[in-house]
Image (cartoon, rainbow, N blue to C red; front, top):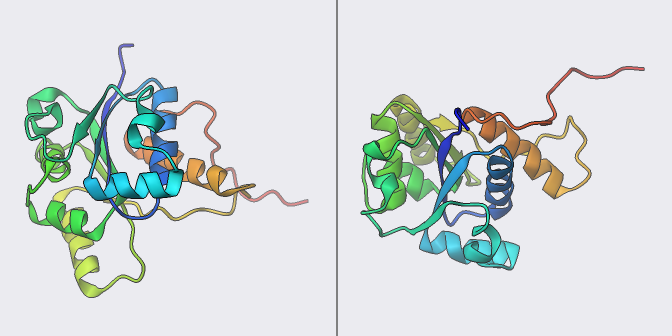
Length: 193
């Protein structure tokens, strides 16, 4: 397809693997090419929270899955032609590395490439409570061009379960990545009767 998007999705070790699962599913359904990087801690969280490995969950939905230490992978280079990236969920350590330009692994390097190429980078910053360092790093990442979009679930559309709430959030992230998700519910105002 002529307007196909080529997206990097990174999964780190913060709680919230369901958000990554729903995002990958929506991007796949929308026809985007997804290339995935899962950190070692992200792999542990995915297996704990979703009871399956990243390969079992996403091998049919992603074009490639990379190890966090593979600096030869396409996401490490601006010439690979990615249009956007999301880190879902994004640990505070990953956010700090991205905010400060530290490329200690492929996730950090891919985010650095996306920022230097002036493309969309969405960080699903996941932590509770937030301290001053977290907030300063969020501001630094924002100033570098990242979009900070914590995985907060909305209730105004009355989700019937957590999966539906996560799907709504994932649809928002897909939109921020420039991917149009068909039939995604849009806010139309409160209905009064």
